[in-house]
Amino acid sequence: MDRFVGNIAGLGTGSGTRLVVGRWAESPWGPFTDVMVEDNDGKRTLLAPTRMVADYVSATYQFDQVLVVDVASTLDEDTLTVAAGPLKVSAELGGVTGLGRLLRLVPARLATSPRWLRLINPLAGLFMPGVRTAGSAGNGRTEYYGVTTARSILAATASWDGADLGGLARLTPPVRFGFSSAPAAPMLVTVVTSIRRP
Image 1 (tube, rainbow, N blue to C red):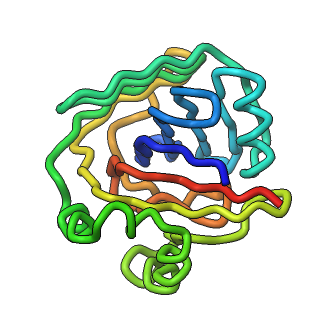
Image 2 (image 1 turned 135 degrees about the horizontal axis):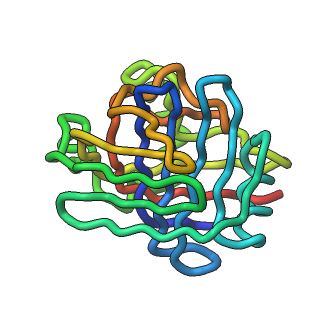
C-alpha cells in the first residue's frame, strides 16, 4: 500500500480549464507537487516534477499528455501558489467548509482507513456528485481517498504559457483522470490517498 499525505486543490477557471493540484508532504518519494489539467476541449495533461512521479501517476490515472517540468508550490494560511512548467496558479483560501467541519468529527485514523472508505463510498457520490472515496485505479490498482477537512477557495488567478485562463469557476464538467472527480465547488482538502498495487 502506497500512502500519500498532503493536500488536493480542485478548481475551475473561466476558460473552462480545470485543475487538480496534489501537494504531498509525505509520499514514497518524499515531498512533491503534481498537477492534473483538463482543458476546455477535454485534453488531459499531467505536470510532474520527475520521471519517476510521472510514470507512477500516469500508470494510475489517464492522460493525453505527460510533461516532466519544474514544479514548485507554497501553501500557507491564506494562499496556495503553484508554478509548474507552463502553468502558474495563485489561489486565495477561505475558511473550513461545512463539509470540512463534518469531516473533522470523524477520527483521522478511521477517516483514512481503506475499510471505512470502502464502506462510505456509496454515500460520497450522493453528497457530492462525481466524488468517490474508493475505486479501481489503473493497472489493477485500488485507490482510497481519506479526506479529513476541507477549506474553500475564494479566488484564483491562473495562466498557461502566459495566457490568462480566466477567473475562478466551478470544476464542471467533472474531470476525467480516474474513477473520481474533485468536488465541483473549488476547495482545498487535507487528505491521505492510499493506493494498493496488485
